[in-house]
Length: 452
Ligand code: XUL
Ligand code: CO
Image (cartoon, rainbow, N blue to C red; front, side):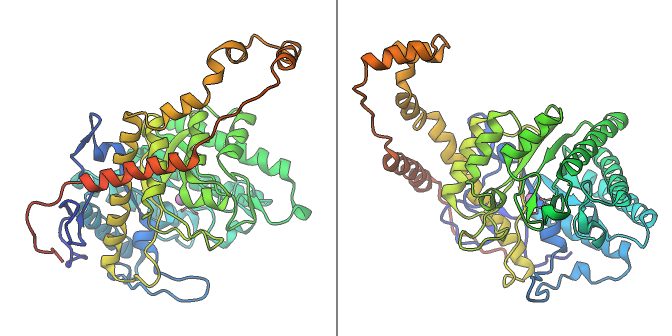
């Protein structure tokens, strides 16, 4: 046991003061014919939760985790996995996600790394079978090791390209073995620092061919999980090729890969790209590539990826609104690509961060569902575009006009009247729904002891 201080986290209702209880996330509660846990499909990110030690560019680690103290790589990896599964079960999350190097450190050679990975994949498989916790996605870390200094699939060095391909091959084999529902590509170093030394066309062609090889190999071994690309505009590179949803979609279309990929959208990546999260979700949904999300939040006063646990209810409402509108998750889910702050270094903070995030998204789900059920925004939107339902508007909508016809119409109708966009009222509507859901949230029946 690694988390002796914390027991099974349960739903206790909105006025519970127990920090180790869900106030809004009630996994079995039905929202529109589907249990909350099935809507939200929460996943824990292995890297932030079990590997990270709180170091930042200015300071050493502050988090000393007992499961990371062993020195022999496989012993350490197994202890970490045991801590992870204890955590998943206590939290009651159905899924987890990892990079290859999260589950076991690299060996001295690629051969040794693969040996470690094979051993750990079997170890995890057993733990997954006993616990029922499933793998939402795995990925290959192709950004931390110095070999990726010039990129992985976009590296100028063909040996690096081959090395990265070997890691993805192994990653797909593990994905198949563990029944991963998705496989993710986040191109942390797939970008450039300066055009002065960069052949952009060659790099993009290589990246596309790399993705294609992954698709082919998945087919060959019978891995039928969904491929996901995770856009991010910058950091660590100055410019990343998978900049945002729109850029990634254009790339997939250009290279004929769109049928094989969807997107894994991350809130803090959206804000780094100068977008809202809901913008990214809407763009992806429009193109039918909304796959999965990395739920976190950035700090708008800082220009980097702070990966905070999502606590902003308003943003969660808008994100869940887009997700529900798009039909909900299919193979995707909500992965917490989020880390406890450097000063929140206690093991228990890992629970508290996840509980905060899960409650936030549970509220988001409830409010978004109601907004959609009541068509609270849709009615206003339909009203706003009403001019396209009759007269010249209908002709435009049905493609029955050309410039000559429109000009003739405009010449006869140049007394134009616009109507208010009513933004403040719409924001107040979202607030009203949010506050109503919070107000109506069931309180716990009786005071319970904290289980800390
Ligand atoms: C980095 C990031 C990654 C990906 C997986 O910003 O989001 O952790 O989610 O490689
Ligand atoms: Co992420």
